[in-house]
Every structure is written in structure tokens, then in C-alpha cells.
Length: 328
Image (tube, rainbow, N blue to C red; front, side, top):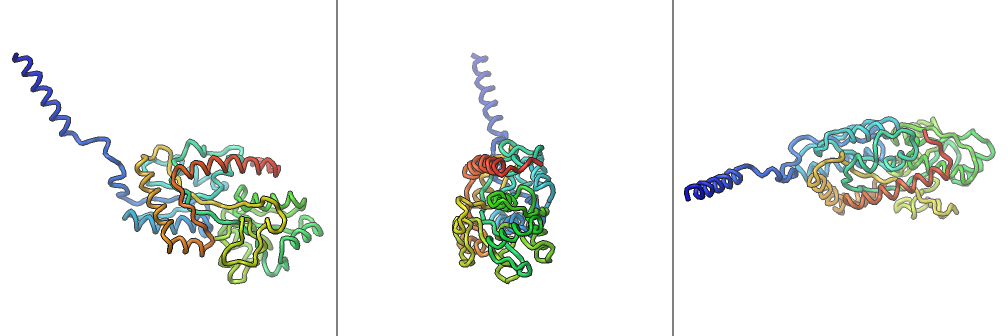
């Protein structure tokens, strides 16, 4: 009997001890974030990825009550900054805001220092924008047709800038060159910002870029828009045709931006970030601010972004192969 009583006492004691131990499985998101969060942008300042990241950092700071700083790590067609996030501690304090280069690079580079499917935890598909072909007023080029005629008349004489090898503006321009069988020399830069500075300085006469990076220069008249690569005309540039309207079938090449965290980041932290992003992107005033800057909001959470990545990795692999672009 005494033995039985002692066993009961032991069990009661063990139960009490168990109850007194803090619950280890408590949500990590409960206190997240409790310090500064870094958002790495793998491009130079001033481009669409940088603009998106900085606008989002303000909204996340408002929503989550901590500082979100943007750090630009340009290089290797975005591979440098992207791989840095892949190797970061998966605690939610190092994030990535990247463009479509994330899904293009696996098919463009021989040695990509990250796995688009295994090394990241998708957070949110943020926004998208069409690409746009632009020319300097000094070039005298006012249309896509005129650009093609100039290229045919003087092969290799024309040059165009882009945000870098493998960016969707680069692919859009290469597709046009292949379709028309013309030679226009590509001058890649380390982001939309430097490319835009180059064309504004008159270093190059042409550029294909994501709309947000050149939107202000188009509106001011510093650059002339020749065509957009979206499925419809941009709302405040009604006189600029789409490539489809100009007879280029299925010529839709957009640039999307997304937020990623390192693989292994706690799911509840990812969800907290995703919910904050989606809430911000659905605010009418913020949505209008993005649209005025050249972006259309998407606001897809982790599952939607995961599907977009799978679809676009395959899509751009096909485009690159059809275009005959060699891996670099």
C-alpha cells in the first residue's frame, strides 16, 4: 500500500514538475520581431526591387513595431545578395526582396549559388510591373518599328542598357532581337538604377527596363517610351502601345517582386510577415502609391508565391532555350 501511495505521490510530483516547466513549443512569432530586421536587395539602389523593399520596410515597421532596414548587395546578376540570404540564420531577421531574376538565374547561370526551391521560405508575392522600351530624345527614335529599321540599316551600331544579364528586361530585348533578326549590343548594369543613370546621361540611346525605374523620367519627358511589355497599356501612359498591339504575339514579360526568408525560418514567423505584407498591399492608399510608381500589387502569400516560382522557373527556362541565350 505504501508503495502504491509513493508511486501516486511520485506521479503527482512529476505532473506538477511538468506543469511548472515553460512550454517550449510557444510560438516564436509572439515576440517577433524584437530587434532590427534586415531586408537584403540584391541590386543597386534606385531600381524597382529597391523601391519595393523601401516602401514595404516602412509598412512593416508600422505594423510590427520594429525597424526594418534595407541593405543593397548588388553583384553577379543578383546572385550575390540572394545567396547571402540563403546562408543567413533562419530566424526572420534577414529577409530578401528580389525581382524575377530569382526565377531566371537558375536557367541562365552555370553555377547558381542557391536552390530556388530548397534554400528559401516563400513569404509574399508583392507586386509586378511591365517592362518598357525607352529611348533618349536625342536618339531620334520614336517607335519600336523605327528602332528595328535603324538596327537593320546599321547593324551593331545601336546599344541598349538593362539592369543586368538575365533580368526580364534583358530577356525581353533579346526576344525582340531574335524575332526581328537584328543586332543591338547589350550593355548590362548592376541594377535598374545605374542603367537609368546611364541612359539619362546619354551614354546609351536605348534601354529596356522595369517601368518603376524609368516612370518618372518618361513622365518628365527625359525619356521616350516606345512600348510596354504588359498585357495592357499603363494607366497613365495611354499613348504608349503594348508589344502585343504592335503585332508581337504573346509578348508579355513582366517583372515581379517577392519577399523570401531563409529555409527553416519558423512557419509562424513567416506567416506573421506574410500577413503584415498582405495587409499593407491591400490598403487602398498604399496600393495607389505603388501604382503611381509603376507597380501593380499582387499580395499573394507563401502558397501563391511558391506556385509562381515553380511556374516561372519553367517558363523562363523555355524562353532562354528558345532565345538561344547561352549560360554564363
